[in-house]
Length: 247
Image (cartoon, rainbow, N blue to C red; front, side, top):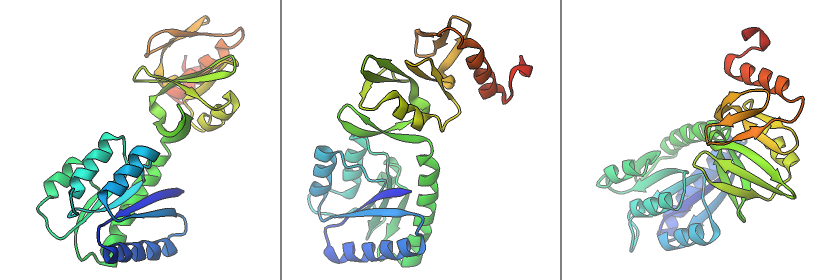
């Protein structure tokens, strides 16, 4: 697995210490591929997040920095859509409650030992690995976005364009072919092809008959001739764990 790791601290010495611990951790855990980036100010980190859509999987963030507290930086990143893990490093416990409000993974008081940070990193990477299996990185609306698998209702091909429909009712154009899309979604048992024009999530199907499948988003997908039996079997297999004998 590849992970983007950001370190933000206004003191270069502290950045060096944290990076050294991360490098040591990476040597002992070659299964995790880390792309590390250092930031010497909150402004630098927020600029990259806003202008380049930089959203690290893990952010190790100092709280006491000039102009803006790390907890405020974390809140702004959350507002920008960041869902990454956050580890706060600080010289005081005064802002522990603020750290809780932005769903920080850990709040560590400096100086942080290598052993302690290793223990926290173990927990963070286990949770990240479990979470990554439930998300897809897709090129949407001109940028790479991380989409939760359970939020995908269906994909539709319209001529040379492909569209993704999400549970919040939004529609997005994908810069991918249906073959490329299905190669990603087929790893999840809830996704089925419906003819050549649709890929649908059985999780969002509320009813199915020989004519069409109705979706919880509203509307329905018409079934091509000969598709019903296969989809019927897939539907019951997904929900019941077995085939036709369950009917």
